[in-house]
Image 1: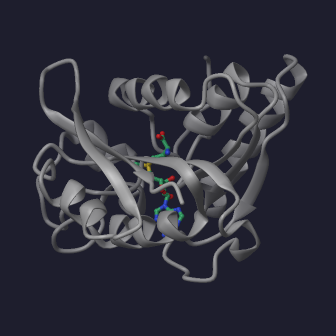
Image 2: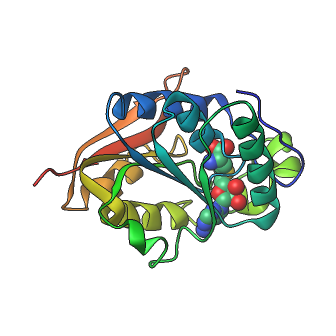
Length: 206
Ligand SMILES: C[S@@+](CC[C@H](N)C(=O)[O-])C[C@H]1O[C@@H](n2cnc3c(N)ncnc32)[C@H](O)[C@@H]1O
């Protein structure tokens, strides 16, 4: 999928497309409600909406400049025939975010900022990607901690969550998911180079 991306919005790397593919398999063949947090260009939300036209896909972004690009990409996908997604300006760390979706969501996806503050990054990241899109507190887990607890609140029983993370977080992110009593089947997944890259879990069935 071609997305518009200009300065002020994060560029989705290959790992994110892998996450999208794994997560789309999670929702194959059933009516579904999806929530993409920290959506940036809208890469995850729009690729799921394209693969599953029957899905209701919500996407949340905090940065107004990024959100304006999400809107442009979303409009372009609708013009190309995809189902519209529902865009929300919001903070993934707000404990009351989208509380009307509590217990209603089949799939929560998130490629958040996850690099520990102060970590040296490649020039193309440091010079072009917004700070807030990349860094997330001392251990890189500030946003992910909130996403894990909110996912437990949003998911229907049997629903799944997938979170991209740094390759140094292959134990810490699964540990955050395992610490939630309502989440089960916690697994971590590697990228094409074999590095730990995203974690998944499922809300326990009643
Ligand atoms: C690593 S980028 C990923 C963008 C997109 N999900 C992708 O895969 O290409 C992280 C995005 O999260 C947004 N963001 C950072 N903190 C956020 C927060 N607290 N709530 C919502 N969005 C946030 C940033 O503005 C940025 O667009």
